[in-house]
Length: 381
Image (cartoon, rainbow, N blue to C red; front, side, top):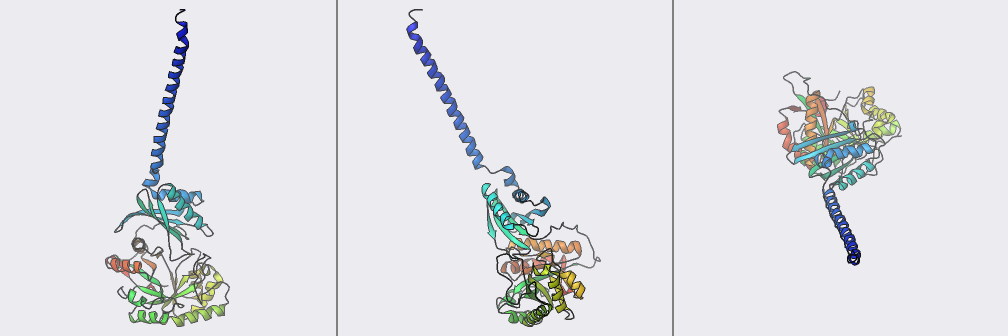
């Protein structure tokens, strides 16, 4: 016992060091494990976002107060490959810019990317668009200012020998002297709307008439404020007196010779104002012209005003190129055909844009086995 006492402090010290070393090793191992786990977690995208990019759009829209019924998503397979087509239907006064920014941020946080696209109906129907990828899947988001409409089931409303009727109108002609040449190869049933304040409006209108094509006056009207380019000179704006509206309509018709009908350019504010629309229809009453409501806003009162004034009218069912890219146009054209088959008729509006014309040239021949292409005057009532 006496000889072992001097060694006890060393044994105690050695035991303490051994235990401390073990603790250090355990802490080091735990740190390594946590570091590896963090690396794995940071390098992996959330499974839900990778599998369904549309779910991310719905989640962001929901955080901003939009109910799920306002988000319409579909996975599309076409010649360009597979991609998600998501439309968010926003109510009047909704902060769509906040939605677009939040969607871009959410995609970035999940390892994807969404970039802004230009829209052709800004300030009215088309409020904004994004395109990119998420989780390795292509995604396009279109924010539109209208009410979501459930797809009608296909039903026959015609006699067996009849086909559904489809009218197509291409807007914004007259800015280039070659607009007539651009559409010359399209079936002549495809109508064209000419802007009266465009530099080549008369020249293009006369060329379209020589083709035997139906011409519309694309009447500029006041849009909702959107910070973009306005409707231009001679537009119909809210607050004009009836005589001034009549004068502006007459001047616009003189600039587009041979017009058979009229449709609104922009106009998401003007077409929602009853007094303004009554004045426009009073100017058209008795002329034999029809009015095609482009429906740049779901609040449009144009057709009600037309009925009161005894003016034949019809309305747009589908926009072909709110995003002027071929996959989007192709998808919208298929939607227009489905609408015609479901209801017996449909009106699609696009623009004199290379992507739109290219898709129509490629697709219309095959579609004529399913629908009959007609000028819009055939559908005006």
